[in-house]
Length: 170
Image (tube, rainbow, N blue to C red; front, side, top):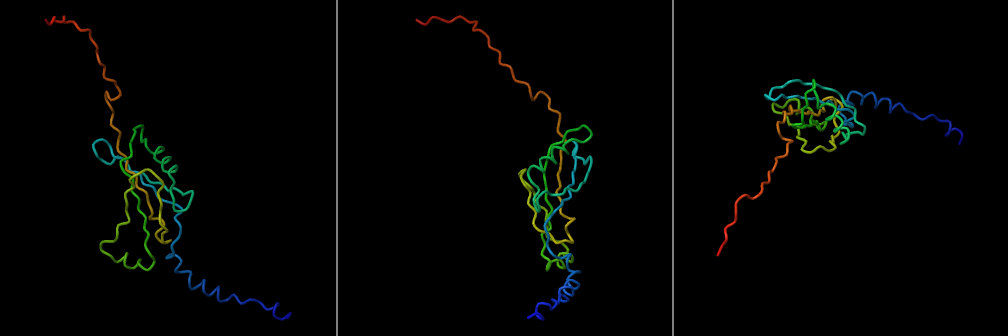
């Protein structure tokens, strides 16, 4: 009985498997932990004024929360003292299966992974192959807010007394 307990567990097969499997790790799907956010600012004459980019680390995997998104939009709505409004939000999320990578790279017209975000709410990302993690992106297009002239004024209604005399009907 003592000989069975003193036997050492053979773990060589685990190490060999890890050596064989190591080159293929970049093709396994993982949670999205960061997203590149690109800001495109368009002026009043519909020309691109500026393009900025930053990396945002997600607080919870695969989800850019509504609060994070609103904070980003508020923080980036000004450029050089000019106020911009959100025109559209786009999400680029490659959720390709590892078996389809070869077809994706060889295709003349690859599948579009770009989608329009219609409402300001939490943005969910699907798990992505490690090799394509840095391609996940949010694109926010800002449009210059036009100067409003006389929009906040209330129209006045003038009341006048009735100045005509009434006729007597007989």
